[in-house]
Length: 402
Length: 227
Ligand SMILES: Nc1ncnc2c1ncn2[C@@H]1O[C@H](COP(=O)(O)OP(=O)(O)OP(=O)(O)O)[C@@H](O)[C@H]1O
Ligand SMILES: [Mg+2]
Image (cartoon, rainbow over all chains, first blue to last red; front, side, top):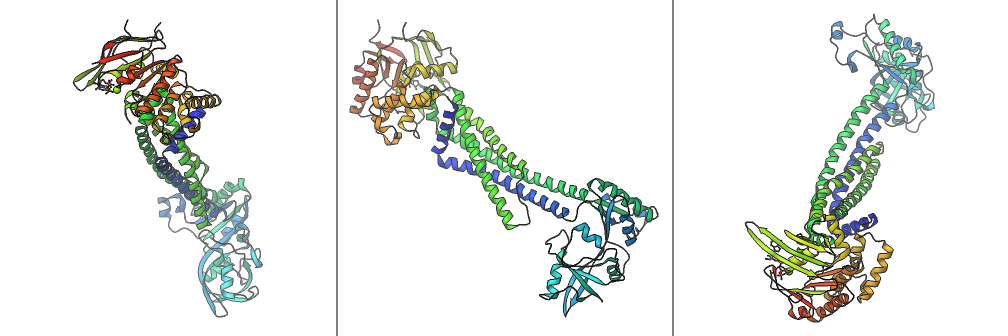
């Protein structure tokens, strides 16, 4: 029998029993759609987090006070007592390291800002001009903090877009004096609208010179030092230099943690990647269930068509021709289910993207290929047994059955 | 050389403890071009004999020579080939594939034999015209009368130009007049050279055959062609 004929014959048998075909295609498509959609969700979440981290700045190295944040608990540090504070001087020392392009001291707290009788809670970010450069923050109006100004001399502030809107409404803000905490600051700039940033929304902050913020919170310590390496290749060097500089400045004690953005990213990437695989695996189970359904449906088909199988044998079809016909039918049904499921899955992913525009919910290529291959594979695998049963059928008995 | 040579055929069915000797010590020789009616009471082994002749079943003992070749020892694959090329079946219940049209049903054996679609279409069209079914080519079996169905089945059985036609009660599901038409059709084919073996209960139909084999308890009770 020619392969084109086998294909046409199998397609004919499949469409000859619409309900059975529909059920099987449906089962298969649900499995495939589940894999495509859930992996789109998982991978979307992974990409979202990775993107958010990348938007913090490029070639980033972060210095945190304290030792055990990512290195795990170290008993040696527990004995040495309280770690030293990170200071603005530390940040300036790091900024002079050879692999470092710039470094920004960062202190964060909350306070109240008021203007013209309007009052709101704000996140106060105390930092330097370098912070804007490292994070790629731009101003919509006015200018950023003056370079080299750590702030005791000047009382200036830069407003997040939302803070400006709530305090000033339609009024121009640049040049006005606002009160933050119990001191007055001149607004010199308004940040461009940035949308959601990881952990901290840049639209709802007020940026002050770092020393001004430290004075406001009555502290000498920093929350972070953000360091930008000179290039991608110097990230690790910058990390080591930063650690060495702080150690030297802190009586030879390693009381800070230096992490690279790449390391954080890689960790998140890995965790969410594993999550996606796990979700794909769970969805894959529904494909296995679909496979078992395929087998049942094909067994019913073989029983239903016993007379036809007997006839084909009487007309001189050898066993392998009959097996091929049934296997082809199973493969066609699985393929139809896989394609339909893929379309449904892509539709679902599209719906997810429409519902959550921030989430890049695209199914990864590996998941799509794996789902389609598994659908075809299970269809064929579970089609073998019914097809063999048909091929082995005794023609006399098959013909007697009507 | 005879077309069919059966010698000392035994066919035993085991049902639990009991054994049914459906065919017992059966010898039968049929020359090419003969017209044989196989008759006898129900359960006498007529269908079993026909299935054996058609290579749908194997004997427990004895030999079956078809065109001089011992076919009982052939592999299933080779037997399928012999069925495809040398044997045509006509059944009491027609056995048309319900989802296929008359033309597609007739084309089925050629499709199994791997004949090209163009040649298939041409031969099907000719066969349907020969059997007066030209205007029924696109009809499905449930849109055809019993007589038309059996004619489609006969067209299918002869499309590969087999050496012999085996028909088990071909008129059993038809009224007398339609049955006569179908028998006349089969006899016409026989006149054209095809060996025709018909199983029938009907003494009138059986009487039309040049040779009648009466079966009883799995053996020949009478054979008008015995020489
Ligand atoms: N598959 C089988 N298993 C067991 N016994 C069988 C089987 N096929 C046929 N027989 C028995 O073999 C004997 C002959 O059966 P067969 O069908 O050849 O009879 P028949 O002459 O065709 O009868 P009828 O005229 O009723 O069709 C019967 O006794 C039947 O019960
Ligand atoms: Mg019978």
